[in-house]
Image (cartoon, rainbow, N blue to C red; front, side, top):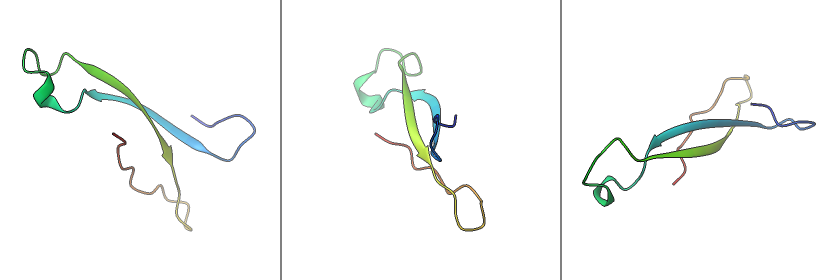
Length: 53
């Protein structure tokens, strides 16, 4: 997703809620939505995205 009127990119994804130890009754049922910035190197290739906590 490109933010309007800016040269910035954001990725939206979901994952299991962390830390998993807090959800012993059903690992995989608790999800959370995350947003992280997408950055590009000088060749235009996307850099590795480090998931936020």
